[in-house]
Image 1 (cartoon, rainbow, N blue to C red):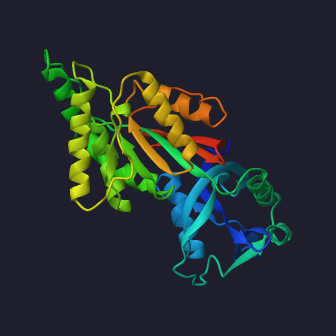
Image 2: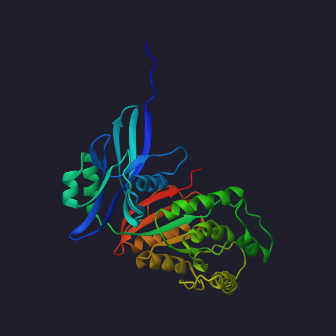
Image 3: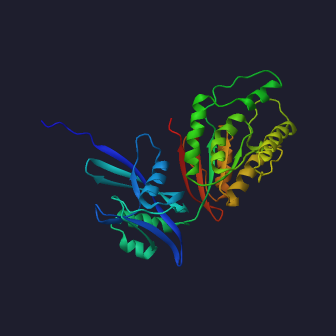
Length: 335
């Protein structure tokens, strides 16, 4: 009897790239001489590579374009020699264009109006992706809601030391690695304002990303969980000191923290940020992530995304346009 071969799933990623045209959106297609076909840029994931980074890398390699990912599109699943190919796609806008050099894989990149692109595309699955792009707004803004990275176990002190000790608890070695990995994943969605709980484990989680994009982390009392006796005034003083240090480093603060008197302050700020249309990253705690997500989604006219609570270093991305939720996706550093 012939030995059975295991059916292999080949993971890949790509993007439907758009830019403003004279009559709506234009999209970028690639021609592959090996197959003599026209398609959206995509390619196989490298071992251990996150699919967000696969999409960014493959687009750059095939088109010479640096992109910012927008809302997720449907996966393309089809049979190829050796298994099933599973391609994750996102809508994407152009961030930079260092230049295209023809190569063995792609010898031409064409920017076309949507109608012409539909005629040029070789595969029905790629036409379906193009149609899906246009079903909803192509230009969206992300609100990213992130749970902090690994920070070991809580050590509860007695009395007034409890809150200060918990605020100062740092990331552990695994958490530091996760924060560095998060910097690249979060950068896939472009440049966001960065707002965090005042807890050191939250601040440290987003510092690598903020440093990479050249912005300040804004500590915010409304997103801070303190498991001990600390008055709103004391917490605001901690936040003001942190933000003053950032301002002195030459990165001016755009977000003004406010004193917290009730849970409504957390919800109100989350809703305000969601409706602002400004790309935003919020880093917070297991305890207050559900109300933050609920308030943000409700403000955008939708229900909060379903699923298990976020694990450490996981995040939801709420993609919105004109103060309405367009799509939501969940990502994170692999466990």
